[in-house]
Image (cartoon, rainbow, N blue to C red):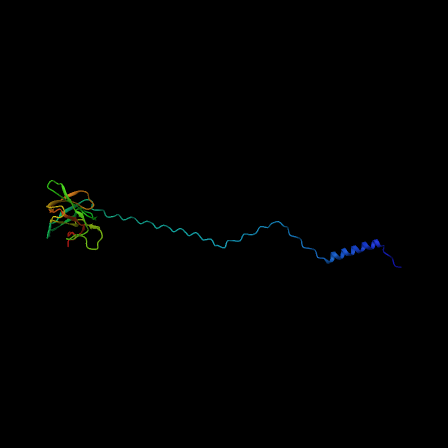
Length: 212
């Protein structure tokens, strides 16, 4: 004999069967990850770091070689003889090292002409060269001259006895000379020179004054 299930129980049974079917046939959804912000890892810089160069050790300073002293003393002035022609006169001044040590000299001696009372009447103009001599052509300035003990340098003085400009009488006057690097003037013996176009050239090696 067939039993009949009440309609109310049958509906409930059908709902249970549907729920079971749905649970078995539908896969579970994956869990949603937490939404908290994650820290993004830093990308390393693409530019390589330049290594700091090693410090170069400083080169030790070599001891300074003492410079040879200038001829500031112990120089004897020796005048030569005045000579010339055609109204142009030249005189060589010699500077002798009377000390026991070498020294060096450079530049022009001071040359003044004085009258009988010692008053200066003319100052020699400083020029590299003149009609009678001086520094060789091409030289642009005075050079150092080294004087060993007992050795000499020399300079050339030039002048004219032909009146020129406002001067009517060139005369003949004694010289007082100041050696290069010194400040004390000394008489140049009995040498005399006229005052017209008076000039002096730099000291050169030897006793010739660079005379032509």
